[in-house]
Length: 497
Image (cartoon, rainbow, N blue to C red):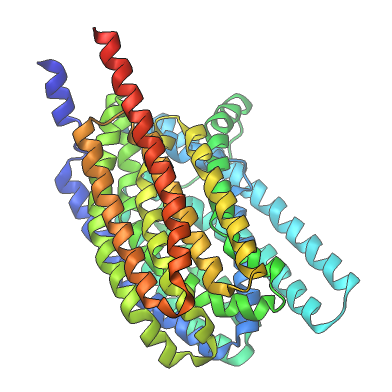
């Protein structure tokens, strides 16, 4: 009787469903406003910059994103430990983790910035042409921006771990508003240089806001505790780095294989714009649910409870993202095609990338569950097939004349495969058969329906062939998961007999 009681009650978060829903509504309202401002900002930037300039900016943003991994996972491990310590009620340990991670994050981001500055200098010395000057100036700007960005991101991560979603929502709103107002003006005046200045101004404003609303962090150094956080955070770092690499493979393929890399990447940025907005919508759920997984695990030490809670969250994500994804496939190409005719080559890839973005949103719940319950290596293993599919598929698409649409469908196929494998590894041994059937049915219906609509939208690009590729790549892991599940059930039945 006691086990049944625990199983039923543990599905709810530690703070209760009412607090969870209130936080979700707060973050959701802020996210919707930021999404609207972000769309306006992205369109304005593309009106003011040509596709080649936008391609340079998209590549530099990858360098900015990779700074998240410069501290070797200490901040990721600290964020997890802060939330788990809060679940136990140990606020002293939570503060000690935060201070140590602050020190490691500051030092590592400075080292990463110096490395970017050195790379900018080497490029400028080797080639003084206009293209080299543009890349060199951009990398030099990134060397400063990464330090600001990493400090702001770290503070926001700690605020989310403490469930201070009001402050983080305010930070997001101020960033979106300032980027739109100051960014459009500065880009209009100075082009790419103005975009760098606008980014710096936005980060400084966000830094002031988080510092004002966060507990004061102190410099701290504890070698033993640092090693412990590294052991916890290093697998999470590898998962995050592999995720970033795997799902930026389309950009790397275009940069390395396309003969017009800046122009093609600039056009493809329409697809990146669409997926960024969908990822922002999905973050509405992951931002709130992520700390709740860790708190629930710290409170109950029951992996099945976390898995059942994550599966419930994924069902809500599937319902919401299906509606948003359908609107993106149907409306976004029509709207952006009329506003940004120079970027028209990126419209078909935009529709093709929507099912993959929704698959990633659903996979995020499984990925967060694996990281919280110390199964990061499984999360890393789930990424490897997708990375191979996106890289090889994208290269094949460009080399065989399929262009950007082929690269987009290769990415979508890789993300659907990742969803299937990650969900199986996270929930396969934790949920009952009925719960797994419900989870798979909702997830695959959402993604599959959007894939069919996207293929119909791009029928003039020979989507029948790509539909066959997607079917083969996705059906094989499904059959494998079903077969393994049947083997596990038979083994359990044999053991019980």
